[in-house]
Length: 102
Image (cartoon, rainbow, N blue to C red; front, side):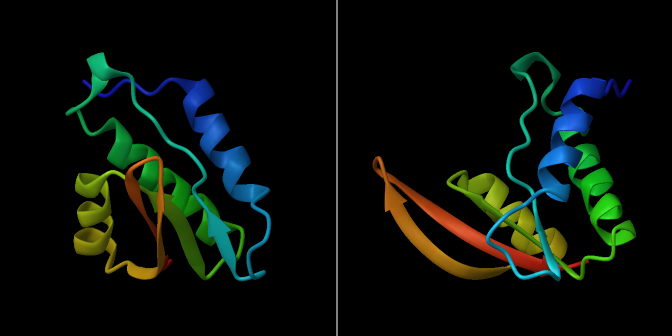
């Protein structure tokens, strides 16, 4: 059973709509998280898909995000053909800034 908490979805949408320091054609997923007890149920993927649909409906052509989670990074590359814009290191982690077409 898929259970989406409305507050998580609203946060994701708000952060996409008001992304800053990006080209006008690009929106951003600033933060999406799923509580541990609800992981592996497709909730994160559903939040991402809903965010992509919202970004496209708002007229954006690209979506951008950053992550230090290697599993998530590989998911974005495989599922959306995301390209790496840059990499940086912080606190012992490697972050990937990535973008893909909507």
